[in-house]
Image (cartoon, rainbow, N blue to C red; front, side, top):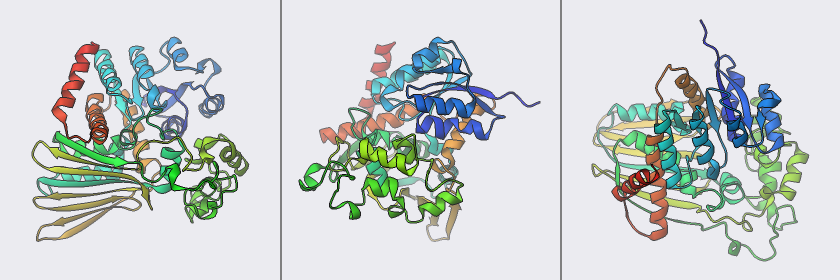
Length: 445
């Protein structure tokens, strides 16, 4: 007999909450139903409510109102902005909800510790959206490394290559541009990457150092003739790769085959209802997008914004067994992808997480094998779909969580340590960092 669908509420109905996670219920109505929403933006709240046929009595402006209404579902998807994760997640767990929480789990170490404590105190599931663990490419990579095919891992190079227009969208003009308003870029973008390294290497980091800065997106890199907006008659707009007109209106200038790809996916090229267009305006028609860049934050010149996060950062780590790891993140790539190299005592593995995903294994003195993994699925190569599938199965009692909040804490500790190392120009001893987390745990009890 088919079990009834798991019921979930959504706190934060933006791009991630509504499109990446809640949309799973529309594709799999036999598995999950969205039965409540808390979202201050009336348009986003109404759209999610209409899509999931949610009664008005279960639509709330604030998460406090939703929690005060009593437990409405089995679990909660929490996808608010970075600095608004801790309080609603703790309140939801205390109210009886199991929680799927968007990454990063919190923008401070104290917030991360409080979340772990709340999960362990209440006995509720707190699953952080480290979605790469659930994507076929990353699972295959983990499987190969876990098999010992290249022997004991000696050194790793892992690169997070952020395409230039994504950098401009999210980390210069967008919500993650300023660390005082969100979080450092190494946390916001690379807690995924630290989590993958923790998962694959199974060795604690003992020492860590980091360098990085904001080189390009600064006012001194253009002259006084450059206006505040791309739409204000900018003389370099036609050739500027960061032009808001090119990214959001004439997007074929940025991705030449974009119209064909949108049409092939069943989307209207003139009203592309996907990221990043849905983040700049609720009206994704050309007229709506034009108005958004003429009046909103996404039309600002990238050299005239209030951004302060880095556009490149490198982290060097030493593992307990002596192996070395280098993580490089930058926002000037020609193509959005992650690339990596693992060198072991038996061979070398090279991989690129881009369509088509490719993993090449070279065994010392032996054969070379190339494995191709489909990464075309929407949402982190299928990771968004995968984590929702697993979260539903966890709530049904069919499987144990692939990871826990305490495991996720480690990747966040590494990100916080990397930012401290960058700012202080010092080597961080991770034992001290973990002791700091433990001291916070004791103090907050």
